[in-house]
Structure formats: structure tokens, C-alpha cells
Amino acid sequence: GFFFFFFFFFSPASALLEVLDPEQNTTFQDHYLDVDYDLSQVLFVATANVMHTIPAALQDRMEVLRLQGYTEQEKLEIARQYLVKKQREQTGLSEKNISFTDDAILEIIRYYTREAGVRNLEREIGNLCRKVARKVVKSGSKHREELTAANIHEFLGVARYRDSEVHEKSEIGLVTGLAWTEVGGSILTTEVQVLDGKGKLTITGQLGDVMQESAQAALSYIRGKAQALGLTREFYRNVDLHLHVPEGAIPKDGPSAGITMATALASALAKIPVRRDIAMTGEITLRGKVLAIGGLKEKLLAALRAGIFEAILPRANEKDVAELPDNIKKSMKLHFVDQMDEVLALALESPLQALLPAETDSLAAVAPVDITGNLPARQ
Image 1 (tube, rainbow, N blue to C red):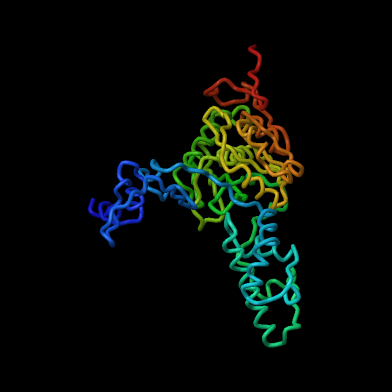
Image 2: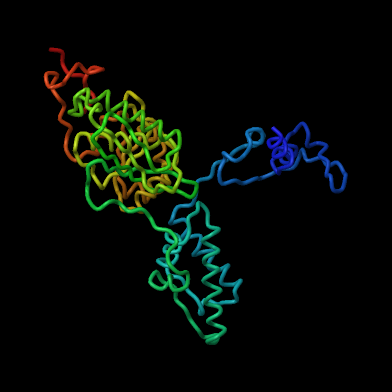
């Protein structure tokens, strides 16, 4: 209790709460000068990278405008038109001393920065300019340096980041998902391994509570659809399932990996490979409905960077296509789906072979359906 009291009443958030509250800011008192100010007509603009660290009471007193991060092409244009010129002038260099190719700037964006904005990009450009300025001082004012993708590492060192790449071949139980992070989108590989056991589901990869619940919902959907997947109703009694999401050191959470997990489970159990050239994102329900997700633009840009040109998305996100950059609309084939059956039909390399009722060990828990989602005719 004392910690909360201390944090709230002796933090910037508490001061902002008083400043932004229309009931209090007409007589805001500056404790240094001990003078009252009327701040009721002042417009305050605050910025934040994430919302969950802002106290709810403070959020309630602000109008929230969500601005999407810059795309790779937008960062390139900002750097070409503004950042390079600004940093060059600050270090006393001329256009004759230093020049950047587009490939060099893209190399910095992809492998030396990870951000939604351009602050670190400007910092790295400034770092390059200072190193070239040192060479100009040593060699004379006529020294010229052209920075390209080939020589950028000589100035900035080994690449700090790497983009996840699509796996080399289609494999059983291996699915490419799409994720949103604070610094943009990324692709997220999901793996499932089937082991001898007694029906235990192991989930690893430092997944948050919401993501773990999505995995449980995906498994329940698979068990309910066992007959359509070519499995007996009791299949899970003799196997353990291990679901893993690399990179294990990075915390992950959110519901949008639901269909990715369900596809990985279905592929591993049915022993059918998943297409390597397709990515997906969407929340799943126990009945197999595919629900909307956020961060669509960032996720599709991540797929494009990784060399994936086809994606499966919730139909509820079809309205967001108008806001996508033109390069995504022209380059990518987008499949909008309502049901998990449609996801499996698109993602698996071969159709699922449903079991006939006589082939099952016992009655299905629910009425069996085929991969298209149509109920079979009654006998």
C-alpha cells in the first residue's frame, strides 16, 4: 500500500493528473514559485511508446491518438530528405565528402535499428558522419566517402539485428505466424512435436497468459474436430504435444497466434506439411471462428521483408485493406477467412482425409464436419 502511495503521489503521472484535470488546473500551484496558474486553456501534448505503463486515471483524462510506425520505405525517404542533410551539416561535412546510397540506408534500417520511429536511425547516420569527418580531418578536405551496403559494416561493425527468414522447406508441424511488437511487425514461427505420452500439452517459448490460453483453445478445437482431421476421438490419450515458439528469450503475448497454433497442431497430428510460402494471423474460438486482430500493416510488412507474398487473415480485417500501403496491395495475395476449416484448406499442402464413422473408436463429441465446414448428409 505504501509503495503504491509513494509511486502515485511522487511520480510525474500524479503531477500530470493535476495539470490535465479540468476541475483542478484552473488553480494549479507551482510549488517552486508558490504561485497559482490557470492552465485550463493550455493544450498539452504527451507521447508514449506503449499504453500499458500509463495509469488508467491519467489515460481517462487524455484523448488518445494512435499513430502507426513508419514503414521501411517511409524511413528511407525521411532519411534521404532530412536526416542525412541534418547530420552532414552538424558534422561540418559537404556533399562532396560523404554520400549515402539507398541500399546503405536500408542496411542501417534493417540491421542496425529496431524502432517504430527514426530516432535511432538518425543517431546511426550521425555516427557515420562523425567517423567520416575524422577521416576528412586526417586526409584533407577533398576526402570523399561513398557509403554502400557493402562497406557500411566497416563503420558500424557487425549487424545488431537480423530479420527472421522463411524456413527452407515445407515441414510437418511448422507454421509461420505474424506478430506485432512495439517496434513494428515480425514473423513468428510456431513448432509442434508429437511425442509418446498420456495427453499432456507442453507450451514453451516464454508465452504470456493470453497466448497460452490461445494454445489451449486451439487444442480443444482440434480435439472437437478429430474425425475431420483423420484422427480417432481418443487420439490424445496416447500422445504428448509440445508447442514451442522460438526465440525463447523474448516474451510474447496476445491472442492473434490462435490460428497459427491450431494449424501447427493439425499438421503435426495429421502428418501433413504446412506451406512454407504462406503466413497467417488471427484469433481462434473453440468453434473454429477466426476473429479480428490489430497491427495488420506492420505484420504484412514483416511478411514482405521475409519474402512471404501470401497471407491468411480474418475476414473482419478486410475493411483495413484500404489503409495498407500500395506495395503490400500489389505484392501480396491476401486470403480473408471466417472459419478455421478455410485456414487448413489454404495452409496444408494436401487435403485432410476425414475418418468414416465406422473407423472411429467411439462416437465423436460433436457432429463431424468436413474440411469445407459442411455437415455430412444424414444416413
